[in-house]
Amino acid sequence: MNEPALIRKLLAPGQHVAVVGVSWKPHRASYRVAERMIQAGLNVSLVNPSLAPGPLFERTVYADLQAVADNVGSIDWVDVFRGVEHLPALLEQSLSVGAKGIWGQLEIIDEAVAERAERAGLAVVMDRCPAIELNQLGR
Image (cartoon, rainbow, N blue to C red; front, side):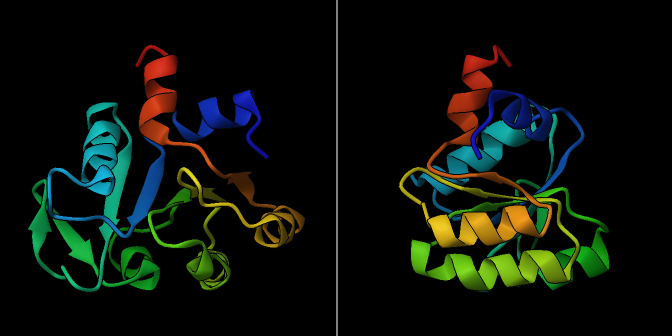
């Protein structure tokens, strides 16, 4: 978990990331991080049932991960902007759509979920911010 090489791989341009819990409010971290990943060349799908099917960043917002998989295709990893209590269900959804990784934002840590995800073959990052990591990578 949180290995530098893994973080670099997940943040490589072209990776398809589903941002779960994205906000339409520019002052929210989920908005800014999604925008930053788009600017860095990641293929970003947005997930928030309250906003679906409205547009954000000129992209469709989906209700859930299954809708992303059905409409866009395979998901490389899932970026979680939901409370830690949602991680177990989001891991299940990630596995059901064949995602290859799950990333918990700052302060989103669940060791049991991380262990289960790694046992299932998923890449796991927790308590890290992709925008901060992109900045540290000079991207």
